[in-house]
Picture 1 (cartoon, rainbow, N blue to C red):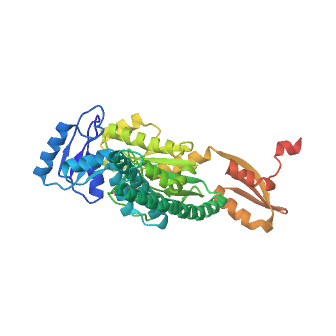
Picture 2 (cartoon, rainbow, N blue to C red):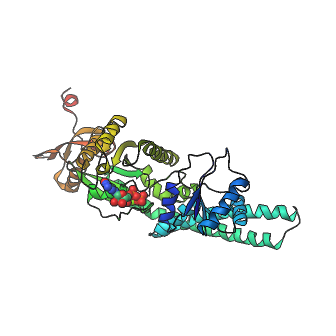
Picture 3 (tube, helix red, strand yellow):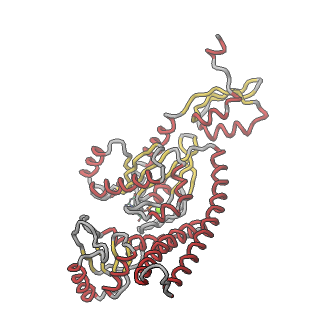
Length: 411
Ligand SMILES: Nc1nc2c(ncn2[C@@H]2O[C@H](COP(=O)(O)OP(=O)(O)OP(=O)(O)O)[C@@H](O)[C@H]2O)c(=O)[nH]1
Ligand SMILES: [Mg+2]
């Protein structure tokens, strides 16, 4: 395959090559073009197109991959001009997602995204034929076939959305159960391959599969982290990438909800890359978080893969990202600090309560222990007197047991 760089960018095709490797395709060459805008009909200008033909012949390639999303027209014209299949970045990412989806929900989400992508392509083809036909009243056989295909695709999209809504309902029930438990929720978010799953495993002893491949995790996994006597729910979910296809963002709405509902987002970045790349990846993740409206929650920047860093780079990172936590899931470095920072984040939002829980409500006491971790308790004739620190929302739930504060009582 030959990778083609988007016009007007610095033209680094490492990530496209990595995407292709994940999809099982080996890159044998690359071509960059510098234009203000891609050619509207052929993406490449005429000169570059000739150059590419030569490259393809020399390299004996059988596929061309483009690092941008191509318009249906550009894709079709390129395929005609080159005499071989042309795929774009979006199609490659969709293909990887399709290969990595394991759960029923994941598979439905990917199929929906792929159909939306293909439907746009059919529409493009259709308007092309419409022009050929000369306009109103000249319905050719090709057009009729495409109309049929489009209708079938639309029907399938509607069916998929219905089934996804059903699955989302089940997920909502599960989530409601978790939320009833009122445990603080933490979401891992970050660029694909940043080390999110490895970090979840290190924090909670989970065994989410980890691989040096892009988009290895698609389905969310939630595990309990115990720290300072308290329990937290940590969710690892799908990674992000630059130019994440909008079809995926739409289709993965339910999965991305997990991030949106978190109280704290751990933004995990692979710190073993250079500073420009780190900032570019961080920006890409921030963009997606904003797009899915998950940017309201508190955020903690986690610089992962610390074991890969030189002393000099460590100093640079400490200087540039003073609030970040440096961790290595491989050596365990920084995991304790990260746990303390997590505790600190929630601690800041706790309020002190004094409660009297009657003995017959022992389950409430157990719940309090789970939520508050360390608490002071004293057995009295009326029940157990408890001094605890709770998140404000949860404290409100225990209001019926609240003892009036000494100052108010004495007044
Ligand atoms: N050296 C080193 N490698 C790490 C560390 N953490 C993760 N890795 C490696 O980085 C690669 C990606 O790790 P994952 O945990 O799968 O990354 P992810 O963010 O979950 O990736 P996706 O699910 O594909 O988005 C794997 O090869 C890990 O072994 C670390 O602390 N040090
Ligand atoms: Mg993962």
